[in-house]
Amino acid sequence: MIKRDWWKFLSGLLLLYAICFGFFVGIPDTMIHETMRNLFFHVGMWFGMFSMLITGFIYSLRYLRKFDETEDLVAVEAVNVGLMFGFLGIFTGMIWANFTWGSPWVKDPKLNGAAVGLFIYLAYMILRGSIDDVHKRAKVSAVYNIFAFFLWIVFVLVMPRLAGDSIHPGKDSPPVLPMHLEPSMRVVFYPAMLGWILLGVWIMNIRVRIRKIQRNIEY
Amino acid sequence: MLFAEIKFLVGKEVMLELKQKYVLNGILLYLVSTVFVTYLAFDNAITPETWNSLFWIILLFVAVNGISKSFLQESAARHLYYYTIASPQAVVLAKIIYNLFLMAVLSLLAFGFFLLLMGNLVVNIPLFLLTLVLGSLGLSSVLTMVAAIASRASHNFSLMAILSFPIVLPLLATLMKVSKSALNNMDWSGLTGFLVILLTINGAVIALAYLLFPYLWKD
Image (cartoon, one colour):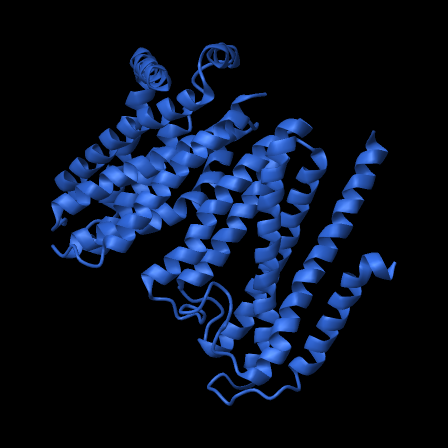
């Protein structure tokens, strides 16, 4: 068990560590005070969402190569978990934004990118719902997923850098890594991010297994 | 070979359009009446910013309306016939090229009506026309692909809107940025990045359509 599921224990331990030390670790005294601790949670949602959506994209590509139905199940569940992280990321972001910028939603390319991502993947779910045939659904939604993922990446990663009018941090660094982080915070930040990603993989794993069982019951 | 097929299929699209003139006339009337309604609704409230936003929003709706029929005009049996005689790449490229012509005509007409009703607020006309060309190409390629996806599902009219609006946003946001600059000044500097983005999106969408459409075509 430990040999196969060690990463699940690791995820639990890392998140436990992040939740405990996230509230103890020394943070620099900035204008946003203690809310800086939200970094360990809000950015974690973004990491989780991103890794899940990339997984969904890869499995959609794999589906189009082999037409194996299991790949499609992984793709849809990865997107489902990605959507969950996306909503949580927006909620944690709203709490933070309300404190930092004085309003839960501000007009900003990064925030818009996150919202558009949710629209795109909610539409993916509606598209799946409107096709009855299993193989056709898998194929058409895989095509949409690949197509939409590319345009969404352009929107969230390229446009905010080009427009240069984002007030959201993380513009000068690679996509999501806050490079100017205090060393004391890094000790919590990186393990926390790994923990959230592993948690996402774990939830996805459980949901795919449920789907497989449901499929076998139906047949 | 591919080129000859595309040429033939574009000719077929033109013939089909001329045979069912009421469809084309419907789109033209839709365009004109929408522009007229906004002209009345935005009485005395037209600034360069609203001019720009209205123009692109109207063009987006016209494009969605005009292109959503791409794969619905002909019966499934006819599609099966094309499937046996033409390569899927030729089919999708021909549709994109035909829709590009359609969008170019429609966007020029929209521009003409805007000039007539709301006055000319465009300072840099060459830049604006360039935006129209790039915009027509982008809208036709993205929306043709979305129309192909939506045509595979049931209830596809509302599906066309929810699938295309979030996906088309990166393109539309860039177009609006460039055309806003054409409305404000003669300055071409600082736009290179946006024009590169537009060309990249257009090129990549056409490449994706070329690669992904065969999966939608084959049942």
